[in-house]
Structures are given as C-alpha cells and as structure tokens.
Image 1 (cartoon, rainbow, N blue to C red):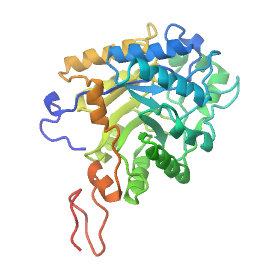
Image 2: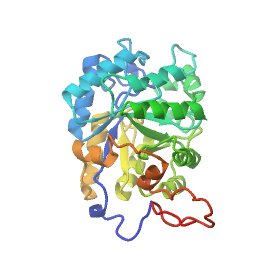
Image 3: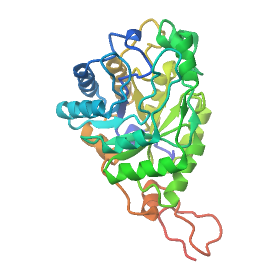
Image 4: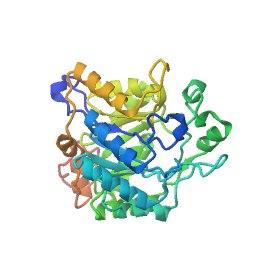
Length: 357
C-alpha cells in the first residue's frame, strides 16, 4: 500500500467499514451475561443492534442453549437466516474456526475436522464471507493477555488458560486450496485472516498459480501466540506488504483493540471490535459490550472526519460477489505485479501490464 502526500486526509480514504464480533466464543456466558447472547432470538437481536450502531460486517459464531459454542451447521443456518431477515444488507462473515470452544474443563480448544469445515461452503442461506486461516499455526490467544485481562473470567482459570494456550490452526496447503475452491464455487467470498507476512506470501503464491482467484480482502490478526504482536513495527511491515488492491482490516485483542483501531481509522484502513476481541474499557473500570464499542469507533471516526460506510458502500468496498477468471486477472485486480513472462529478466515494475519477452 502507498502513503503519498494526502493519504491521511479523510477525503482521500475509503469510508470506514466496521466489523463487529459480538458472539465471543472463547468466553462463557457467565463471564459477561449482560452482553453474551445465548438464545437464538438474542443472537439475532445482537446482530440487529450492532448494525443499528454502525457495523456493516458481522463475524458469526453460534451458541447452543447451554452456552457452549455450536458445532451444528443447522444452528449456523438458523442464525444466518434470522439475521438476513432482520438486516438483509449486512455482510455476514462466518468464522471459519468452527468451533474452537473446549468440550469440557481441561479439554484443548479444537477446530473441527477438515471435512466439517469444508461444509461451511454449503450453508443455507449462504453467508457473504467465510474467514480462512493460511498455513497451520499456533494460536495461543492468551499468550499476550495479562492477569487483569482475564480476572474473574473462565479464561482466568487454570483449565481455561490451558485450553486456549494450546490451540493450533490446521490449515495445510491442500485444505486451503480446496476450501477456497468450494467457497468460490458457491459464490461465498474468502476473507483471509492472516497472522504475519509469511501467510500473505502464501496467499500471493496461490494467486500466482491460479489457485486463488478472489479479491484480497483480509484482516491482520495481531494477537501474539504464533501471530504478530500488535506493535507499530509489525503493523508498518504488514501494511507495506499489502498490494494496492487489498482491503485491509486490523484486529487485535484486549486493551490493544482501541489504539490499533484508532491507527486504522487514521490510516484509511478498516476496523474490527467486539467482545470476541475485548471486554474491557481502557481503564478496566468495567466491561464494555460490542454495541458500545461500535459507537465509540463511530464517534472517533467522526472526529477524524472519516465517514462510516453504510451497508451498500461496505459491499462495494469489500467487492462482495466479485471473483476472477484466472491468475493474470487476479494479480492485476489485487495490485500485485504480473507473473514473469518467458524470457523476461530483471524486476517487474508495473502491476497489470504485459511484460515484453
């Protein structure tokens, strides 16, 4: 991405897309009963409330009535249908990590099998997006948390810390290629959740060989524990690695969320908030629900002079419904340099232009 003169002027930036993550699958309902929806009606209403507050993308996980994360695709279908009926223009983004909640105390938090995750491409009604991880990786979500982050919650117990510190992401090359293929065939956009530049490079290589003909809509997930830490050096390097056609959202955890989102707003990038990422105010004087977090970002964006995208604008920015026919078209649309042509020597200079042999 380029930051020439005027890049920080709001009139030269896209309108702000706010993603909300209100379902918080790592928490138990008792951790924040005022804001964690459990019944299907409450889960649907939470999406409506987030939309009305200014979020146009919702990151979806589903709970059973006992409060545990659901592993039943029928429950996802039910929630998606319910949200579609109430807020039809909202971008529905299913979390591809179905379901990483531990079954019982002391169990490791696990993602479901490859075959089950492939079935996300068959959800009915279909979501707009499914998130995807690239390259199998450690996902120790509690590594960078401190005692105050988890005080009085299920994550603050020995069992909770053990379960989530040992979580890993299964995302090998064959599974990734097949998953993107199935999602695209069903008209569902792949949303890349990337931990670092090496995963970005894998996405680029897949695009170069024609295995990933989709827009580069991605989130930098800076949560530590196998992912980048949320500091300015990692952020700057990741942003510099993104091609000009990418649409980048920033994500982190706990008290890092607000400052990282403030940077995103100032830089012309996009934001994510919600109790899946953080449950505290910045002084930890109280817990802060997803709707209040959205309202806070809307206020900050207004102070920065950056308008918040409505649902129609968010769909255009996210290129919902767009797919590409081959590697050349994909590379050009996403702003990567074209593949090297036979006989070409030296560095490619201009994305989207043919290289003479």
